[in-house]
Image (cartoon, rainbow, N blue to C red; front, side):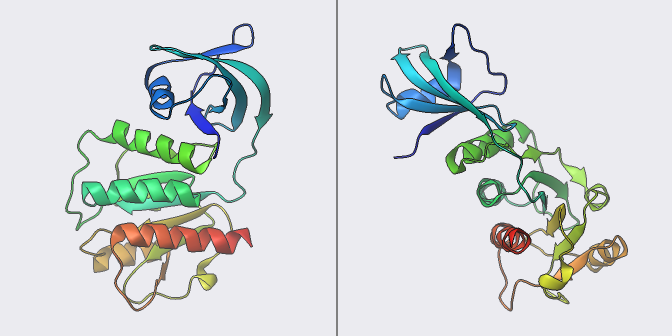
Length: 232
């Protein structure tokens, strides 16, 4: 069984002990953490502390520090630019993108987006954190506020890919190293104007095969393929 993970952005020890409260404590209670059990505490910036639960009460878990370590940043900086899509689909894409190693998410409003952002950034951040905990990604990916399409195109990157259903080339020919920014369009697809604008900004249209993938599927598959190729 894997060690339980706790995310605390500002870690503080007193007498080699840390008090875990609020939502993270609740997760430990639900997961039935026991006295003496080892737990990983991480701050989302690559710092990880292994602690042993000393007591688990109704309001808090007190744990004793055993060791600490520093995890280097991912070797590949992988940025997902994703158009606004249905809420459930976007949340699935966020969760799985973190699992495959995306380091930043940049949501944007595309011409054919059939959804609006609303006030969901806090929820998106929570999804990203939970996915990072589950997949042991100790550097929590950044998630930007919803931007315009042109703003996402301006994000600096060595590899610039637009996954498209038509006129797409091969992935290998589009790879030029890290950082890698890849764009996923809305459920209605890209407009001709968006494809033309992306080309002008240095993006290579890339195909994911003959079939038509849902946006959330394309976000997962496309990101996994890019990371695999750049990690080789």
